[in-house]
Each structure stands twice: as structure tokens, then as C-alpha cells.
Length: 183
Image (cartoon, rainbow, N blue to C red):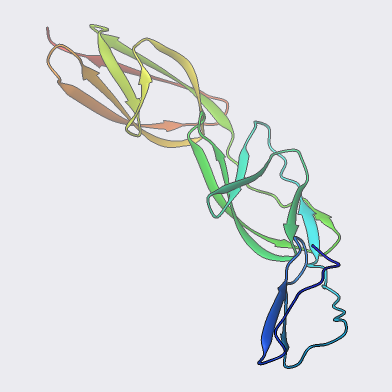
């Protein structure tokens, strides 16, 4: 914490490092003791992005959540690779953004619309999976998904028999997938 007094030996060189969040680090080598050292840390320029979405999404950078849709997100100026995700809708997109210092930009994330999926199974003692993630037992009624192609699998619990279909979900539409197992 500055200001600070440091006791340094008069012999040899010493390295002093200063860090402050939001500022560039400074490293100074002192070859001889000084009565005082004055250093100014340069501010790292920042800007904001705001992602608009018709459904909630989390925004991540390097695996760390940095914000959510609809709220300004503070980032250092420059290029960033963001991941936009809504796990409930099975939606994930990567977005390259350029953050301008002291400005707010609203890049178009190109997020897909939402459709619905209904899954039926006879007999119904099954487990239903979408893209290998279990979502429950049938009937699955009007489960919302981002528009796209999905693998839907039903596993009949008494025998372990599995059946699978590829389905296309269209924004604003509904898709029905029936499975029939022999008892």
C-alpha cells in the first residue's frame, strides 16, 4: 500500500514492483538507495459492451463469467473472444468483439430464435436425452430450445434399449418426436 517506506540494503540493486487493478504494472530497478521514488501508474483503457437478447444469456471470457445480457459489461479496450450461453436452451455461441476505450458498443450476437420440442414414448418408463444430456422422463411437453439441430435419444429403462432421432428445431415452431418400444 502506498505511500510506503521500504528498508533496503545499501548494497546491490533492488527491484520494486507496483500493481493496482485497472492500471499497468510498473517495475523499477534501484541501483542505489533514493530518498524517494515517485511513480505514476497508467490507467488501462476500458470500454463497455452490451449484448441484447430476447432470452437471458450468460457472457463468458476464458471460462469466467463476465456478465449477462442486457447489462453493460466492462472490459479492457481491444479485442475479446466471448462465449454467449443459455444452458436451458442448449445455446452457445462465440462472439469476437472489439472494445473501444470509454465507449459502449452493442454488437449483434446473431442469437437464434427459440422453438419447442415435445417428446413422447410408449411405454413411458424411459429417460429422454438431448445431445447426451438427460432432461427427464416423457412426456416432455413444449421444452424450449434454441433453433438448430439436436440429437434426441430415449432409453427404455427396463431393458436399456435406446432409440435416437435427429431433429431440427425452427424458431417459433414446434417439433414432436414419438418413440415406441416393444415390451
